[in-house]
Amino acid sequence: MFEINISPEWQDAIHKRSSVRKYTGNPTDEQLSRLGVLCKKLTWQGITVRMFRGPGLKSVIKGTNVYAVIVAKNGTPPEMEGYMGEALVLEATAMGLGTCWLGAGFNADIVNKNVNLQNDEQIHCVIAIGQASLPAFNPKRRSIQQLCKKSEDEVKNLGPWQLTAVENARLAPSAINQQPWKIEVDTNSISILERTVLIPKYAGIDRGICMLHAAVGAASKRHTGVWKKQEDGYMMKA
Image 1 (tube, one colour):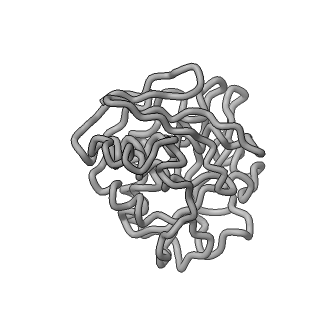
Image 2 (cartoon, rainbow, N blue to C red; image 1 turned 90 degrees about the vertical axis):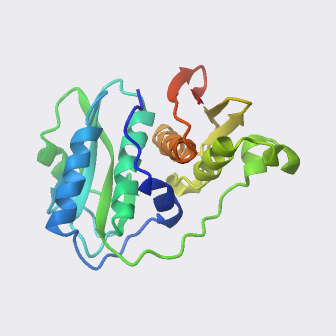
């Protein structure tokens, strides 16, 4: 699970990505084609990622009518939805496009009809995509010390791949910025664990987004690993 080819460009994209709701136009046909190729690669392990142009987004999104739909088979871990969807987000960002995860900003009836949703499938989120001037990304996030329950000196002693992984993870977007995860690191692993939050509806998807960010950070330091399910989250050893 969670095994995808990570593009080196995604590391920079993590620091550029921002949630955009106002766009200046749709992606070009060339950009859509490139994203469509990635969607096919992300479609596995109970997840289907599809691109659409046309009705489906609500008025909260302006200037684009292009969106990606994350379809999950019943029983698929929500972390998979976040992981695969954020891969598309980072690829779009690397191409200079803006994106926005939407849990309520889409018309479910239209989207369900577009994808011909089956009885054993669910749609929890879509991703708006379009041309946008990306704003400076300066998110309000908990510090690495807060996330990992470590002192400043302990953080400094983390290995390069772990430090980059944690730095990336803390920049992950989440519904109403709840950051529904705890992070544990030791000498050879990083774990993204569940954290109790006020609104848990999208917490699993958000943790999947966080996991991809961490994996991108590890890969940027030439460390790769596979996420393994733990009792209260996932662990990656590199």
